[in-house]
Image 1 (cartoon, one colour):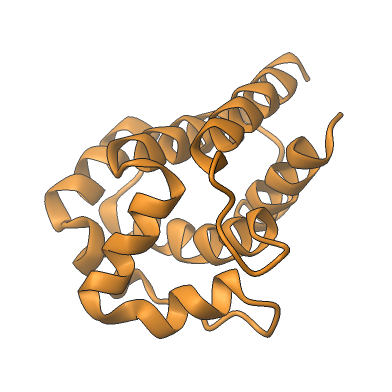
Image 2 (image 1 turned 45 degrees about the vertical axis):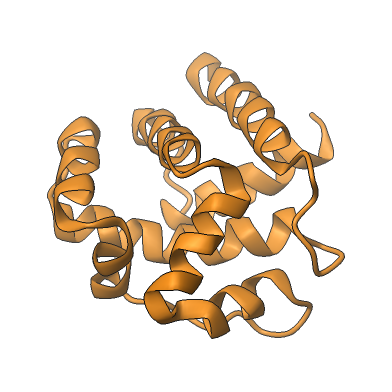
Length: 140
């Protein structure tokens, strides 16, 4: 397993509380869709910044402690209809989906930006890593 696979697996397992099940594969699909629909990792981070969460984004990308973000903020940034659509695909409700994303996104961004900046090829790396991890979780 590559380094990126391990990073993403740790973030997903943290968000799932260590429960390694089909929910992990569904969450991976959700994360891939979320990143892709927002223009890659940089596009997603720009969306958070433009919504007033720039300090949060800086903490996730930087080397210090990650500022937490709550489910309401996730819904504000992504939009309630987008969160509801993702929740439906996950077989969850919007509040639980937003709560899961609030735990996953800071960890994922933090691990994908170890040098304090978003890599130029971050969307390609993230998509490849999530795809590989999805295969791993689906085969176990």
